[in-house]
Image (cartoon, rainbow, N blue to C red; front, top):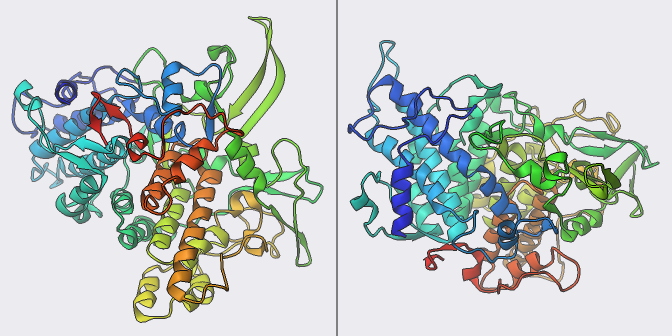
Length: 586
């Protein structure tokens, strides 16, 4: 532990390279030779240092969250380190097992929080350090959450470490719940939710507001992991309601949809929903870590080269969709509206992975028997549209909705969660389809908190404008983004069991069934984006007493047959987390 803590102290005070995103004009990030940050230039240099350090964990955040899940698999070309991640065989020398990179971010944040003069104003009576202080608090909490959900237990320190002596102290070990509780109850984050973040305009064409994760989403995630489900749901809703203009934050109706029952043509606005890096209200992107454009400088993302064939990787990819994801996508029932009130299910015999849900086939494409002129060999071309930018997208609009659904389901409101998936949410849906099942005063008060005015959240109606996106309504169920008009799909209905007479037992049964639907939807919507392992981990932790095989069964299902390549015992919770120094971790 001590050698890594020492590493964070030494790394936390200088900027290792000039990157094309964050050129500060100085290698100094924060200044250890005085005890306060009270010069205007300290503000920009300090925040640039923190953002620069975030770049170091960008790829890792995605890879540790995706490669250990059930939606991607390795290939013959995968590096030994990345293969070991996928097979839960990560040693201390693995390039993806570098906790000091997280602590470098944390130490920079700790220093800024401890030393910035937040009362100092400029000659226009504006606070000089307040916005960066708030951003540093959010980034520190978010980074600790990534760290502890990766390692299970971590040394916890909130004061800056600047000396060898400080680095050699014994710091308390915090688990996931303890880390979350600290930031929820002790760090004062709730008082900062309405504070502004720094505004640096556009940097290399990217709105700098996208470099910061909103405080309400940080608090939503902390409470979700801590098991404070209703509180988490309220933070996610508050982000929608209070952080956006005129209480308008609909799902929008982007997706991919068949345009005729010949099953040959489609409307596709799905890919644009996660490639848009603008700051427009319709853009889904909320938080990203920018990458650099030149491989030899700064932090250049390796993600594109791992999944897309090109001359740079000699047309050899390292990761590919798993059989589990292919099977899950094909298992969905696509609901097509053919007019006059008639709906049909698309056939299961379509080519190019277009049976069932359409999202996978529209972000993943392959072309066999391509010719490599350099090596005079044949190869299979692969492209994954979610990896087409140098920047690392970590939070988008649909994630807010699905985490709202997860939190509401765990809080005891499975009908609310289901209708996020099925129809989309507005006040009419809540009144007609949700409230009848929650009619006591407490539940009624809870549902009243989630206000989605019908005039602002207009649910898409195919009978008004057949098969058109965006022209009709602005709200849909998340499942409809790839599976047609879900609200009219007789095969996708709120789980019910008429043999369960006890209402409490029925609700508990429905919560588990809806949770399964949410887990499937997270796979269909967010495949390859880096959330999967952590989504499965949260469910596994909740079900550890009743279904200790949940995580193991999911991950070992990534391949068909019994040869998974995984030798670690994933029924043992200790193997769910990474370790370092042969002892630190869960």
